[in-house]
Length: 168
Image (cartoon, rainbow, N blue to C red):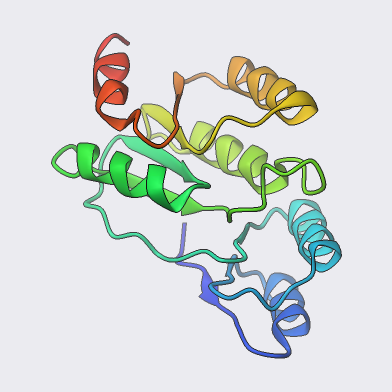
């Protein structure tokens, strides 16, 4: 997978849409999008087989390795990356709103599928506060469908992630 194009500024929505149609994944580091625009971009990305990371996403550097991290919470992600730093992996920052009831885990579900298709990734960590309701149900179902172990790590849980991953 190639690195996503970073898109921001007042015309972030249109620029991101153009990038998706140009065959690129998109990283949105800012907060320029409304929830409706975020949903529209993530839905378009799904149709095109692309990813929209963010808004409010940032690239997280970690050595290549066998762990995929779906980054929702900045705090949980920092903890998980700290624990996995010497083991390596890949981080997909889906944005803080992705697990809200409005956005409904759109990019998280795509990230899980991307990690499932990646032969290098052996296990996946969802770095997020625990979602409630329908979003939690969707994530549990998606985690059961993929062929790799999936564990969650809320802020403060990262150290326990390593022992859960070692159990697989």
